[in-house]
Image (cartoon, rainbow, N blue to C red):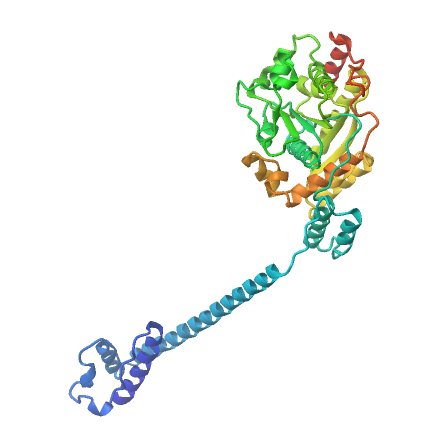
Amino acid sequence: MTVSSDWARAEQAARTATVETGETPPAAVDVSTVDQDNGTPPALRHGPDADLAVEAMLASTDPSRATAIADAAAEAERLAAERAATAVAARARSEARRAAKATAAKAAAKPQRAVPGPGHSTSERAALVAALPEADETTPLAAQLAIDARRRIELTGQKFARPATTRVITVANQKGGVGKTTTTVNLAASLAQSGLNVLVIDNDPQGNASTALGVEHRAGTPSVYEVLVEEAPLATAIQQCPDIPTLWCVPATIDLSGAEIELVSLVSRETRLRRALDDFLRQRAEAGLDQIDYVFVDCPPSLGLLTVNAFVTGREVLIPIQCEYYALEGLSQLLKTIELIKAHLNPSLHVSAILLTMYDGRTNLAQQVAAEVREHFSEQTLRTTVPRSVRVSEAPSHGQTVLTYDPGSTGALAYLEAARELSERMVSGAYGGRNGATTDGSQGNGLDQQGDDADAVAVEEGVQ
Protein backbone atom coordinates (compact mmCIF):
# COMPACT_ATOMS: atom_id res chain seq x y z
CA MET A 1 0.00 0.00 0.00
CA THR A 2 1.48 3.37 -1.05
CA VAL A 3 1.21 6.64 0.83
CA SER A 4 -0.40 8.37 -2.16
CA SER A 5 -3.23 5.82 -2.37
CA ASP A 6 -3.84 6.12 1.40
CA TRP A 7 -4.09 9.89 1.04
CA ALA A 8 -6.54 9.52 -1.82
CA ARG A 9 -8.81 7.23 0.21
CA ALA A 10 -8.57 9.49 3.26
CA GLU A 11 -9.50 12.49 1.15
CA GLN A 12 -12.53 10.67 -0.25
CA ALA A 13 -13.68 9.67 3.28
CA ALA A 14 -13.31 13.27 4.48
CA ARG A 15 -15.35 14.58 1.57
CA THR A 16 -18.12 12.05 2.28
CA ALA A 17 -18.20 12.92 6.00
CA THR A 18 -18.55 16.63 5.27
CA VAL A 19 -21.82 15.99 3.40
CA GLU A 20 -23.57 15.68 6.79
CA THR A 21 -22.05 18.78 8.39
CA GLY A 22 -22.30 21.06 5.37
CA GLU A 23 -18.68 22.15 5.76
CA THR A 24 -16.47 22.89 2.76
CA PRO A 25 -14.46 19.75 1.94
CA PRO A 26 -10.70 20.06 2.07
CA ALA A 27 -8.86 20.77 -1.14
CA ALA A 28 -7.44 17.83 -3.09
CA VAL A 29 -4.06 16.75 -1.88
CA ASP A 30 -1.19 16.73 -4.32
CA VAL A 31 0.69 13.60 -3.43
CA SER A 32 3.79 15.01 -5.11
CA THR A 33 4.09 17.48 -2.28
CA VAL A 34 4.06 14.82 0.41
CA ASP A 35 7.01 15.23 2.74
CA GLN A 36 9.07 12.09 2.30
CA ASP A 37 10.46 12.50 5.79
CA ASN A 38 7.22 12.09 7.70
CA GLY A 39 4.72 11.20 4.92
CA THR A 40 2.47 14.23 5.60
CA PRO A 41 1.57 16.85 3.00
CA PRO A 42 2.50 20.40 4.06
CA ALA A 43 -1.19 21.49 3.90
CA LEU A 44 -2.17 18.91 6.51
CA ARG A 45 0.61 19.31 9.02
CA HIS A 46 -1.53 21.90 10.83
CA GLY A 47 -5.35 22.44 10.83
CA PRO A 48 -8.58 20.47 11.33
CA ASP A 49 -7.61 17.68 8.92
CA ALA A 50 -4.35 16.86 10.68
CA ASP A 51 -5.91 13.95 12.60
CA LEU A 52 -7.32 12.50 9.39
CA ALA A 53 -3.89 12.75 7.81
CA VAL A 54 -2.31 10.96 10.74
CA GLU A 55 -4.95 8.21 10.56
CA ALA A 56 -4.32 7.77 6.85
CA MET A 57 -0.59 7.60 7.43
CA LEU A 58 -1.01 5.00 10.18
CA ALA A 59 -3.45 3.05 8.02
CA SER A 60 -0.67 2.49 5.52
CA THR A 61 1.05 0.26 8.06
CA ASP A 62 -2.00 -1.02 10.03
CA PRO A 63 -4.68 -2.88 7.97
CA SER A 64 -7.22 -2.67 10.83
CA ARG A 65 -7.06 1.12 10.76
CA ALA A 66 -7.65 1.09 7.03
CA THR A 67 -10.72 -1.06 7.56
CA ALA A 68 -12.03 1.30 10.25
CA ILE A 69 -11.61 4.27 7.91
CA ALA A 70 -13.48 2.43 5.18
CA ASP A 71 -16.31 1.51 7.60
CA ALA A 72 -16.60 5.12 8.71
CA ALA A 73 -16.88 6.24 5.13
CA ALA A 74 -19.60 3.65 4.44
CA GLU A 75 -21.56 4.74 7.55
CA ALA A 76 -21.34 8.35 6.44
CA GLU A 77 -22.75 7.43 3.05
CA ARG A 78 -25.63 5.49 4.69
CA LEU A 79 -26.54 8.40 6.97
CA ALA A 80 -26.46 10.80 4.06
CA ALA A 81 -28.83 8.57 2.10
CA GLU A 82 -31.26 8.31 5.05
CA ARG A 83 -31.33 12.05 5.57
CA ALA A 84 -31.91 12.64 1.88
CA ALA A 85 -34.88 10.21 1.99
CA THR A 86 -36.27 11.98 5.08
CA ALA A 87 -36.05 15.32 3.33
CA VAL A 88 -37.91 13.93 0.32
CA ALA A 89 -40.68 12.53 2.57
CA ALA A 90 -40.99 15.86 4.41
CA ARG A 91 -41.38 17.71 1.11
CA ALA A 92 -44.05 15.21 0.04
CA ARG A 93 -46.02 15.72 3.27
CA SER A 94 -45.76 19.47 2.93
CA GLU A 95 -47.08 19.31 -0.63
CA ALA A 96 -49.95 17.06 0.50
CA ARG A 97 -50.92 19.55 3.22
CA ARG A 98 -50.90 22.39 0.75
CA ALA A 99 -53.08 20.38 -1.62
CA ALA A 100 -55.54 19.56 1.17
CA LYS A 101 -55.78 23.22 2.17
CA ALA A 102 -56.39 24.21 -1.42
CA THR A 103 -59.15 21.59 -1.74
CA ALA A 104 -60.79 22.78 1.47
CA ALA A 105 -60.63 26.38 0.30
CA LYS A 106 -62.32 25.45 -2.97
CA ALA A 107 -65.04 23.54 -1.12
CA ALA A 108 -65.65 26.50 1.18
CA ALA A 109 -65.94 28.81 -1.79
CA LYS A 110 -68.76 26.72 -3.27
CA PRO A 111 -72.31 27.70 -2.28
CA GLN A 112 -73.49 25.40 0.51
CA ARG A 113 -76.97 23.93 0.72
CA ALA A 114 -78.77 25.56 3.61
CA VAL A 115 -79.62 23.50 6.67
CA PRO A 116 -83.37 22.92 6.69
CA GLY A 117 -85.25 25.32 8.90
CA PRO A 118 -88.83 26.07 9.82
CA GLY A 119 -89.49 27.38 6.33
CA HIS A 120 -88.66 24.10 4.62
CA SER A 121 -91.63 21.98 3.66
CA THR A 122 -91.94 18.28 4.35
CA SER A 123 -91.45 17.51 0.66
CA GLU A 124 -88.20 19.52 0.57
CA ARG A 125 -86.88 17.66 3.58
CA ALA A 126 -87.88 14.33 2.04
CA ALA A 127 -86.04 15.24 -1.17
CA LEU A 128 -82.90 16.06 0.77
CA VAL A 129 -83.10 12.78 2.68
CA ALA A 130 -83.61 10.84 -0.56
CA ALA A 131 -80.46 12.42 -1.98
CA LEU A 132 -78.30 10.98 0.81
CA PRO A 133 -76.04 8.04 -0.16
CA GLU A 134 -77.10 4.67 1.17
CA ALA A 135 -74.99 2.86 3.77
CA ASP A 136 -75.49 -0.46 5.54
CA GLU A 137 -74.16 -2.04 8.71
CA THR A 138 -71.11 -3.40 6.90
CA THR A 139 -69.69 0.13 7.12
CA PRO A 140 -70.66 1.32 10.65
CA LEU A 141 -69.03 4.73 10.36
CA ALA A 142 -70.68 5.55 7.06
CA ALA A 143 -74.00 4.26 8.39
CA GLN A 144 -73.81 6.51 11.46
CA LEU A 145 -72.90 9.52 9.32
CA ALA A 146 -75.89 8.82 7.09
CA ILE A 147 -78.19 8.54 10.12
CA ASP A 148 -76.89 11.83 11.54
CA ALA A 149 -77.36 13.58 8.20
CA ARG A 150 -80.93 12.30 7.92
CA ARG A 151 -81.75 13.39 11.46
CA ARG A 152 -80.23 16.81 10.89
CA ILE A 153 -82.36 17.34 7.80
CA GLU A 154 -85.60 16.02 9.28
CA LEU A 155 -85.40 17.55 12.77
CA THR A 156 -83.65 20.91 12.48
CA GLY A 157 -86.19 23.65 13.09
CA GLN A 158 -89.10 21.24 13.45
CA LYS A 159 -91.97 22.00 15.82
CA PHE A 160 -93.45 19.05 17.68
CA ALA A 161 -97.15 18.52 18.23
CA ARG A 162 -98.54 19.97 21.45
CA PRO A 163 -100.44 17.47 23.64
CA ALA A 164 -104.03 18.23 24.55
CA THR A 165 -103.21 18.12 28.27
CA THR A 166 -100.04 18.04 30.33
CA ARG A 167 -98.06 14.82 30.14
CA VAL A 168 -96.21 13.94 33.34
CA ILE A 169 -93.42 11.42 32.79
CA THR A 170 -91.40 9.83 35.57
CA VAL A 171 -87.91 8.76 34.47
CA ALA A 172 -86.89 5.87 36.71
CA ASN A 173 -84.60 2.89 37.06
CA GLN A 174 -83.20 1.78 40.40
CA LYS A 175 -79.99 0.74 38.61
CA GLY A 176 -77.50 3.60 38.76
CA GLY A 177 -75.50 4.88 35.82
CA VAL A 178 -77.99 3.99 33.10
CA GLY A 179 -78.59 7.58 31.97
CA LYS A 180 -81.73 8.63 33.87
CA THR A 181 -80.65 12.22 34.50
CA THR A 182 -78.98 12.57 31.09
CA THR A 183 -82.12 11.30 29.41
CA THR A 184 -84.36 13.55 31.51
CA VAL A 185 -82.58 16.81 30.77
CA ASN A 186 -81.87 16.12 27.10
CA LEU A 187 -85.39 14.97 26.27
CA ALA A 188 -86.74 18.02 28.10
CA ALA A 189 -84.36 20.32 26.20
CA SER A 190 -85.28 18.68 22.88
CA LEU A 191 -88.99 19.21 23.45
CA ALA A 192 -88.48 22.77 24.69
CA GLN A 193 -86.38 23.68 21.66
CA SER A 194 -89.16 22.28 19.48
CA GLY A 195 -91.67 24.83 20.71
CA LEU A 196 -93.12 23.16 23.82
CA ASN A 197 -93.26 24.26 27.48
CA VAL A 198 -91.39 21.81 29.68
CA LEU A 199 -90.85 21.51 33.43
CA VAL A 200 -88.19 19.29 35.03
CA ILE A 201 -88.53 18.27 38.68
CA ASP A 202 -85.16 17.17 40.04
CA ASN A 203 -86.16 14.60 42.65
CA ASP A 204 -82.64 13.18 43.03
CA PRO A 205 -80.56 14.41 46.03
CA GLN A 206 -77.45 14.42 43.81
CA GLY A 207 -78.89 17.39 41.92
CA ASN A 208 -77.27 16.45 38.61
CA ALA A 209 -80.30 17.51 36.57
CA SER A 210 -80.12 20.95 38.16
CA THR A 211 -76.44 21.17 37.22
CA ALA A 212 -77.08 20.18 33.60
CA LEU A 213 -79.84 22.79 33.24
CA GLY A 214 -77.64 25.52 34.68
CA VAL A 215 -79.91 26.47 37.59
CA GLU A 216 -78.83 27.38 41.12
CA HIS A 217 -79.02 24.53 43.63
CA ARG A 218 -76.73 25.42 46.50
CA ALA A 219 -77.84 24.69 50.06
CA GLY A 220 -80.58 27.11 51.09
CA THR A 221 -81.98 27.51 47.57
CA PRO A 222 -85.77 26.92 47.41
CA SER A 223 -86.03 23.41 46.07
CA VAL A 224 -88.11 20.25 45.91
CA TYR A 225 -87.18 19.60 49.55
CA GLU A 226 -89.28 22.55 50.72
CA VAL A 227 -92.12 21.32 48.50
CA LEU A 228 -92.07 17.80 49.94
CA VAL A 229 -91.30 18.41 53.61
CA GLU A 230 -92.59 21.93 54.25
CA GLU A 231 -95.41 21.84 51.67
CA ALA A 232 -94.19 25.04 50.01
CA PRO A 233 -95.92 25.96 46.72
CA LEU A 234 -94.13 24.50 43.70
CA ALA A 235 -94.05 27.90 42.02
CA THR A 236 -91.72 29.26 44.73
CA ALA A 237 -88.99 26.78 43.76
CA ILE A 238 -89.21 26.92 39.96
CA GLN A 239 -86.27 28.45 38.03
CA GLN A 240 -85.98 29.14 34.33
CA CYS A 241 -83.23 27.46 32.34
CA PRO A 242 -80.82 30.21 31.17
CA ASP A 243 -80.28 28.63 27.73
CA ILE A 244 -83.87 27.71 26.78
CA PRO A 245 -86.67 30.14 27.69
CA THR A 246 -89.46 27.52 27.63
CA LEU A 247 -87.66 25.11 29.95
CA TRP A 248 -88.04 25.35 33.74
CA CYS A 249 -86.61 23.34 36.60
CA VAL A 250 -87.39 22.65 40.26
CA PRO A 251 -83.86 22.07 41.61
CA ALA A 252 -82.66 19.58 44.20
CA THR A 253 -80.30 20.56 47.02
CA ILE A 254 -78.29 18.52 49.47
CA ASP A 255 -81.18 18.91 51.95
CA LEU A 256 -83.13 16.38 49.92
CA SER A 257 -80.77 13.60 51.01
CA GLY A 258 -82.48 13.55 54.42
CA ALA A 259 -86.00 13.96 53.11
CA GLU A 260 -86.79 10.22 53.08
CA ILE A 261 -86.24 9.98 56.83
CA GLU A 262 -88.31 13.10 57.48
CA LEU A 263 -91.13 11.94 55.21
CA VAL A 264 -91.67 8.71 57.14
CA SER A 265 -93.54 10.43 59.96
CA LEU A 266 -95.49 12.87 57.79
CA VAL A 267 -99.12 12.50 56.75
CA SER A 268 -99.83 11.56 53.14
CA ARG A 269 -96.12 11.21 52.48
CA GLU A 270 -96.56 9.41 49.14
CA THR A 271 -98.76 12.07 47.50
CA ARG A 272 -97.10 15.35 48.49
CA LEU A 273 -95.34 15.98 45.22
CA ARG A 274 -98.43 15.12 43.19
CA ARG A 275 -100.63 17.54 45.10
CA ALA A 276 -98.04 20.32 44.72
CA LEU A 277 -97.92 19.76 40.96
CA ASP A 278 -101.73 19.63 40.71
CA ASP A 279 -102.01 22.98 42.47
CA PHE A 280 -99.35 24.55 40.27
CA LEU A 281 -100.96 23.42 37.02
CA ARG A 282 -104.41 24.57 38.18
CA GLN A 283 -103.08 28.00 39.17
CA ARG A 284 -101.45 28.46 35.76
CA ALA A 285 -104.71 27.57 34.07
CA GLU A 286 -106.66 29.99 36.24
CA ALA A 287 -104.13 32.77 35.53
CA GLY A 288 -104.48 32.25 31.78
CA LEU A 289 -100.83 31.24 31.35
CA ASP A 290 -99.62 28.86 28.67
CA GLN A 291 -100.05 25.20 29.44
CA ILE A 292 -97.05 23.18 30.61
CA ASP A 293 -96.89 20.51 27.93
CA TYR A 294 -94.46 18.09 29.56
CA VAL A 295 -93.31 17.48 33.13
CA PHE A 296 -90.31 15.20 33.66
CA VAL A 297 -89.57 13.88 37.15
CA ASP A 298 -85.99 12.68 37.62
CA CYS A 299 -85.61 9.91 40.23
CA PRO A 300 -82.75 8.71 42.42
CA PRO A 301 -81.31 5.23 41.80
CA SER A 302 -83.44 3.60 44.49
CA LEU A 303 -87.03 2.60 45.25
CA GLY A 304 -87.57 4.70 48.38
CA LEU A 305 -90.13 7.36 49.25
CA LEU A 306 -88.70 9.88 46.80
CA THR A 307 -89.20 7.45 43.93
CA VAL A 308 -92.66 6.48 45.23
CA ASN A 309 -93.62 10.18 45.23
CA ALA A 310 -92.41 10.42 41.64
CA PHE A 311 -94.45 7.37 40.62
CA VAL A 312 -97.58 8.74 42.26
CA THR A 313 -97.03 12.09 40.53
CA GLY A 314 -96.56 10.74 37.02
CA ARG A 315 -98.94 9.13 34.60
CA GLU A 316 -96.24 7.60 32.47
CA VAL A 317 -92.93 5.94 33.25
CA LEU A 318 -89.94 6.18 30.93
CA ILE A 319 -87.24 3.60 31.69
CA PRO A 320 -83.72 4.20 30.36
CA ILE A 321 -81.85 0.91 29.97
CA GLN A 322 -78.12 0.74 29.45
CA CYS A 323 -77.21 -1.85 26.84
CA GLU A 324 -75.43 -4.12 29.32
CA TYR A 325 -76.46 -7.22 31.24
CA TYR A 326 -76.65 -5.66 34.72
CA ALA A 327 -79.24 -3.16 33.52
CA LEU A 328 -81.64 -6.02 32.80
CA GLU A 329 -81.33 -7.63 36.22
CA GLY A 330 -83.21 -4.91 38.14
CA LEU A 331 -85.89 -4.40 35.51
CA SER A 332 -88.21 -7.06 36.93
CA GLN A 333 -88.12 -5.48 40.41
CA LEU A 334 -88.82 -2.05 38.92
CA LEU A 335 -91.82 -3.36 37.00
CA LYS A 336 -93.11 -5.06 40.15
CA THR A 337 -92.90 -1.76 42.05
CA ILE A 338 -94.76 0.04 39.27
CA GLU A 339 -97.53 -2.56 39.46
CA LEU A 340 -97.80 -2.05 43.24
CA ILE A 341 -98.05 1.73 42.79
CA LYS A 342 -100.65 1.21 40.08
CA ALA A 343 -102.71 -1.14 42.23
CA HIS A 344 -102.73 0.98 45.40
CA LEU A 345 -101.87 4.62 44.71
CA ASN A 346 -101.98 5.57 41.02
CA PRO A 347 -104.19 3.38 38.78
CA SER A 348 -103.30 5.30 35.63
CA LEU A 349 -99.55 4.72 35.94
CA HIS A 350 -98.01 2.70 33.12
CA VAL A 351 -94.72 2.20 31.30
CA SER A 352 -95.06 4.26 28.14
CA ALA A 353 -91.49 4.17 26.82
CA ILE A 354 -88.18 2.33 27.19
CA LEU A 355 -85.09 4.03 25.81
CA LEU A 356 -81.88 2.12 25.08
CA THR A 357 -78.89 4.23 26.12
CA MET A 358 -75.09 3.97 25.77
CA TYR A 359 -75.62 1.75 22.73
CA ASP A 360 -72.53 0.56 20.87
CA GLY A 361 -73.55 -1.31 17.76
CA ARG A 362 -70.02 -2.64 17.26
CA THR A 363 -70.38 -5.03 20.21
CA ASN A 364 -72.40 -8.23 20.22
CA LEU A 365 -73.47 -7.62 23.83
CA ALA A 366 -75.21 -4.34 23.03
CA GLN A 367 -77.00 -5.91 20.07
CA GLN A 368 -78.11 -8.89 22.16
CA VAL A 369 -79.41 -6.71 25.01
CA ALA A 370 -81.28 -4.49 22.56
CA ALA A 371 -82.80 -7.50 20.82
CA GLU A 372 -83.92 -9.02 24.12
CA VAL A 373 -85.52 -5.79 25.33
CA ARG A 374 -87.32 -5.29 22.02
CA GLU A 375 -88.55 -8.88 22.10
CA HIS A 376 -90.15 -8.58 25.55
CA PHE A 377 -91.23 -4.91 25.34
CA SER A 378 -91.83 -4.39 21.66
CA GLU A 379 -94.54 -1.75 22.06
CA GLN A 380 -92.82 0.32 24.74
CA THR A 381 -89.26 0.33 23.36
CA LEU A 382 -88.45 3.36 21.23
CA ARG A 383 -86.94 2.80 17.81
CA THR A 384 -84.26 5.36 18.58
CA THR A 385 -81.16 4.28 20.50
CA VAL A 386 -78.78 6.72 22.16
CA PRO A 387 -75.14 5.89 21.35
CA ARG A 388 -72.18 6.50 23.60
CA SER A 389 -71.06 10.05 23.04
CA VAL A 390 -68.29 12.12 24.56
CA ARG A 391 -70.28 15.30 23.88
CA VAL A 392 -73.17 14.05 25.98
CA SER A 393 -70.76 13.45 28.88
CA GLU A 394 -68.99 16.80 28.46
CA ALA A 395 -72.11 18.98 28.38
CA PRO A 396 -72.98 18.91 32.13
CA SER A 397 -69.50 20.17 33.03
CA HIS A 398 -70.44 23.36 31.17
CA GLY A 399 -73.83 23.61 32.87
CA GLN A 400 -75.64 22.71 29.64
CA THR A 401 -77.51 19.94 27.93
CA VAL A 402 -75.97 18.44 24.81
CA LEU A 403 -78.71 20.19 22.78
CA THR A 404 -77.16 23.57 23.56
CA TYR A 405 -73.55 22.43 24.02
CA ASP A 406 -73.18 20.71 20.64
CA PRO A 407 -76.51 20.53 18.78
CA GLY A 408 -74.99 18.86 15.74
CA SER A 409 -73.39 15.97 17.63
CA THR A 410 -74.53 12.38 17.32
CA GLY A 411 -75.85 12.32 20.89
CA ALA A 412 -77.85 15.53 20.48
CA LEU A 413 -79.47 14.31 17.27
CA ALA A 414 -80.31 10.95 18.88
CA TYR A 415 -82.08 12.61 21.82
CA LEU A 416 -83.88 14.98 19.46
CA GLU A 417 -85.24 12.05 17.47
CA ALA A 418 -86.18 10.19 20.66
CA ALA A 419 -88.10 13.29 21.77
CA ARG A 420 -89.96 13.43 18.48
CA GLU A 421 -90.84 9.75 18.77
CA LEU A 422 -92.03 10.29 22.34
CA SER A 423 -94.16 13.26 21.30
CA GLU A 424 -95.79 11.18 18.59
CA ARG A 425 -96.88 8.63 21.17
CA MET A 426 -99.85 10.63 22.29
CA VAL A 427 -101.59 8.79 25.10
CA SER A 428 -105.24 9.28 25.86
CA GLY A 429 -104.48 9.46 29.58
CA ALA A 430 -102.34 12.58 29.51
CA TYR A 431 -102.37 14.49 32.77
CA GLY A 432 -106.03 14.67 33.70
CA GLY A 433 -108.73 12.62 35.37
CA ARG A 434 -108.40 10.76 38.61
CA ASN A 435 -105.08 12.01 39.94
CA GLY A 436 -104.54 15.33 38.25
CA ALA A 437 -105.95 18.53 36.92
CA THR A 438 -108.81 18.00 34.52
CA THR A 439 -109.09 19.67 31.15
CA ASP A 440 -111.28 22.40 32.63
CA GLY A 441 -108.67 23.28 35.25
CA SER A 442 -110.54 21.79 38.22
CA GLN A 443 -108.94 19.43 40.69
CA GLY A 444 -109.26 15.73 39.83
CA ASN A 445 -110.67 13.17 42.23
CA GLY A 446 -107.37 11.86 43.47
CA LEU A 447 -106.54 10.45 46.85
CA ASP A 448 -107.77 12.52 49.76
CA GLN A 449 -105.43 14.77 51.72
CA GLN A 450 -104.84 12.18 54.42
CA GLY A 451 -103.86 9.52 51.93
CA ASP A 452 -104.72 5.86 52.09
CA ASP A 453 -102.56 4.40 54.85
CA ALA A 454 -103.44 0.81 54.02
CA ASP A 455 -102.38 1.26 50.41
CA ALA A 456 -99.21 3.07 51.44
CA VAL A 457 -98.21 0.25 53.82
CA ALA A 458 -98.87 -2.32 51.09
CA VAL A 459 -96.66 -0.44 48.64
CA GLU A 460 -93.83 -0.01 51.12
CA GLU A 461 -93.92 -3.68 52.10
CA GLY A 462 -93.87 -4.66 48.45
CA VAL A 463 -90.87 -2.41 47.74
CA GLN A 464 -89.00 -3.87 50.70
